[in-house]
Image (tube, rainbow, N blue to C red; front, side, top):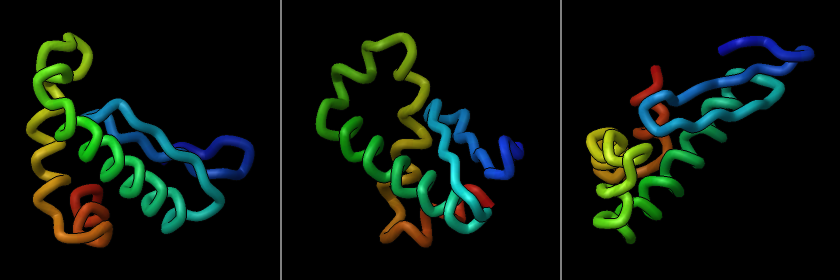
Length: 79
């Protein structure tokens, strides 16, 4: 990630998400949590998201996140 004012920033371009935290582990955990929440929201309204030009391409990564049994497995997607 990039360093901003002594904090780390991590990006997930596959889902257009970003997180900021003081440590690498914290920023990746935050990003994994955000990815899980977004994937659940996407799954709940899949047809709407599929039709949205800025979100349709997220579907393969959403499915990868949803296939993860826990946030540790989601973290592995970023490493």
